[in-house]
Length: 348
Image 1 (cartoon, rainbow, N blue to C red):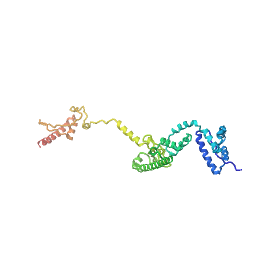
Image 2: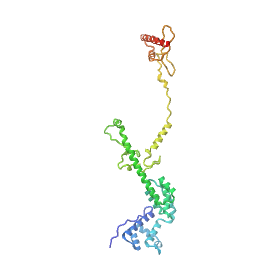
Image 3: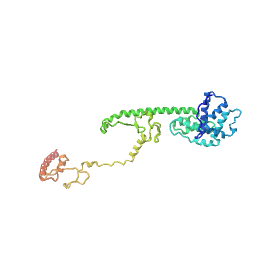
Image 4: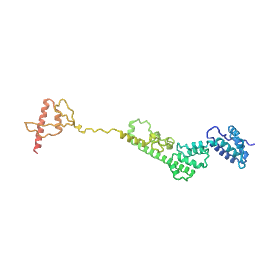
């Protein structure tokens, strides 16, 4: 007599028992096909053997009339249906539909979201389960392209919509990989421009490190661009995929513009103060105006004063106002010379 092969028992303690029971029976039917087991009573006996003691206790509690097949049904199918109804009673249908309607996609991956919808949908007793799953997929998915496609082409089947979502995700992933490679290659190429200044700022034995522009982490990543922590992350600021909010260029640019708006206006400096000379106690003839020009009027022999010339020599003479008489005498001689020059200029 051949030994009974090992087959996993059914876990009747976890949640979503009805959905998991359906999957369990589906795998068991594949086992029947592989073993060429077609007899109805043998199939029922194998089912009772494989499901385990806890599930057998539940089957024993089901009334006999619910497991007795009608004329057109088999013992195996009737038992499977009775256990499914026990795990998913009819009075829970509305609640199961309520839970199903609240399912949303939390992260990229249309396959994972589809599986997340399919199991609860099997407990809602929908007359057209594919149509209901499609509606919830359009409502709860993250991709605007998939949502737009489903709304425009309302007659598109669930299978076609999922294939379109797969294609969209694959193309987006490829574009993101190419964009990361291009950006990081450009960064690595332009980095040596500041090589001389960089070497002056830090010791030569200090290891050179680059930062990833999408996650602010070390670059290059050990497993390539797709291993970037931000690769499957959506920015909460700009809504784009592939970078953290802390590394969002749009957020940083908007912040800079905001700081420019609130920056206090620059005060206009008095450019005329360049020519200002501080008052000195030794110079009683200094002016009180905000701008002072230094003039020296050369005078001798009671002649009318000549024109005033603002020259470096005149400024130098006025700067020495109040010096000892010996130096002032030398300056007077220079003043007479300047007077002669001024007189000549007047005649011309």
